[in-house]
Image 1 (cartoon, rainbow, N blue to C red):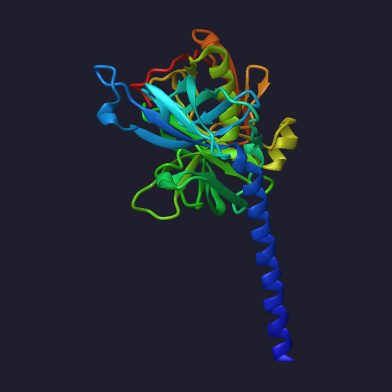
Image 2: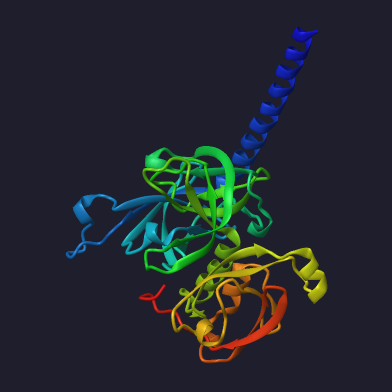
Length: 331
C-alpha cells in the first residue's frame, strides 16, 4: 500500500513538472521570434568607433509588424550606430526613435521584412507567484531562456537620472548583463515587463519595468520622440482597497495609489496630501494604479490645479495640487 502511494505521488509530481515545462517551452517558442540582440557602437571624437569595438550590448523585442522595438534607455543611450540581430540570423541596423531615461525605456525601429511582433499583456493582472520567463542575450548567448516566478509587484527603483520608477516587477528569473531590454513574459507568451536590472551580489532579485508603463512610454516616444512629464512630488505604489470602503464610497476599482512618501515642499505636500493617503481619482479620472497616475501627469498639467480624490483612513476627501515639471535633481 505504501509503495502504491509513493508511486502515485511520483507520477503526480512528474505530471505537474511536465505541465510546467510545457508551459515554459510553449511561451518561449511563441516569443523568441520577437526577441532581438542589440549591439551599440559609440562615435569617437574623430567619428571612429570607440576602441573599434561595440560599446554596449543588450536585448529588445519587436512590438509592431513595421519594426518598432522596445529596449532599455541605458542600452542605447549615446549610440552612434545600433546593430540588431534577429532570431532568424539576419543582421541589420536600427534607428533610435526616442528614449526616456527617467523610465529607462527606449524605442528603436528596424527596417526589415517578415517581422514577428510580441503579444503585449496587462501588468495590472499579474500576481506574485505566477510563472515569469525572461528571454534575452546575456553575455552574448542569444535567445537564452530563464524561468522563475513573479516575486512581487509594486516595487520602486531609481533610474539613472535619479527619478524613482514606480510599479516595478520583481522576479527571480535569472538575469545577467545583456538581458537588459528583453521581455519578461507570462505562461501565455505575453510580455508583462521589460527586464532592466539585477541587484548584485544578491541572487534571485531581478527587476522589470511593467509593460503597461512601457506601452504608455512607447506611444509617446513614437509620436514625439521624447516625454515631458509633470510631477506632484510623491513616491507611490499600487495598493488594495478594503471592499467595505469600495462599497461605502461607491468606488469603481478595488485598487488605488498609496502615497509612500512626499517630496518636502513639493506640490502634493503643499496641497495637503499626507503620507499614507490613497489616491483614487485624478480630476474626474479613476486612478487604479501608478500607471494611471503617470498617464495623467502630462506636460499639459504643469501649472494647472488638479483635484486629487483621496482615501484617508476611512474618509474620502479631496485635495488640490498644482503639478510641476520633472526636475531630475529631485526624487
